[in-house]
Amino acid sequence: MTTTYRIALIPGDGIGTEVLPPACAVLDAVGARHGLQFSYDEFDWSCQRYLAEGAMMPADGLEQIRHHDSILLGAVGWPGVPDHVSLWGLLIPIRRDFRQYINLRPIKVLDGVPSPLRPEILKDGVDFVVVRENVEGEYSEIGGRLNRGFPEEMAVQEAVFTRAGVTRVLDYAFDLAGQRRGVLTSATKSNGIVHTMPFWDQLVAERSAHHPGVRWDQEHIDALAAKVVLDPARFDVIVGSNLFGDILSDLAAAIAGSIGTAPAANLNPEREFPSMFEPVHGSAPDIAGQGVANPLGAIWCASMMLDHLGHPEAGAEVLQAAFGVLAETSVRTRDLGGTATTAEFTREVLSRVGAHSVV
Image 1 (cartoon, one colour):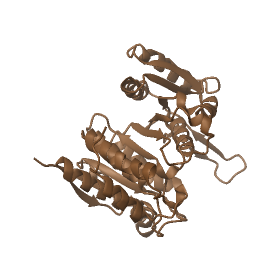
Image 2 (cartoon, rainbow, N blue to C red):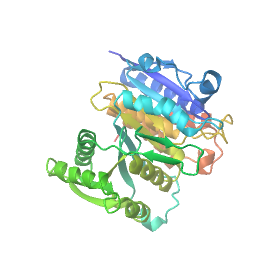
Image 3 (cartoon, rainbow, N blue to C red):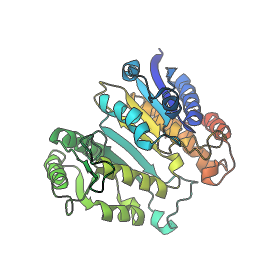
């Protein structure tokens, strides 16, 4: 019996249009082995659309994708369109209207991918997950600009931390840690941010009582950033606010060897709305159109999407194939020091999908 999923594709800008086809090809290949079929609806929502029509997506855009099973996004951003326009015109409305309050970013140093860290730091391996609160926190819409253009011009930006919003991300992170190695680290800055961060710390302590099997601690974000670089193997699950999780996960992807390999999931855990999966690397205008983008981040996103849809064996098979290319061959895209094109890397992954049983 075949299970069919309807996927909304938003290639976006730059290399986003180049990395989604490999992800879809891998999904189709692994799906054929696991009784899964994917239908794709592609949407041209992008900075190019903004320049042509004045909006990143149409007014009814969210309604067009509300009933899809999942969303795959390539990348958003292009010179000439301010980043806050592209972000608030597309990504943030999707995240907030579909209550994708978990941003999940796995971090691994992969065999065959050199990390900028010294080998002795990596001897115990690096495999942790950043759980980022994704819809409130520091990225709120509350605030504004006053006296524009005058010497006394000012800007006010309010952070919003709700008990419900913080509690649900903490419970997700504690549950995830319980399924992994049982260690959670909370990113805070309660020594300098006097209201929101002590509130965050209070809720971490409260929720920890509901997860007695998880050992937890907290670290101020500045010290935590240093420790992620100096001793990344100690971490299992790191949970942080919208801003802290955003910065920390990109830092962590860099120590893993290349931001081009990193995936992200924007999850609605209750599955009331579609979740969205996007590689972290951005639109990379400097290499767009050259066919040399690394598709691993998007392929990893496809694996995370399979996990979320309830097919972890298929998701593991995708990762085994993709990681095997790096561990067992010399095929590398330019960002990893190689000469392979996007298509060549993808063909190598496809040749391995299903070739080995998952262990």
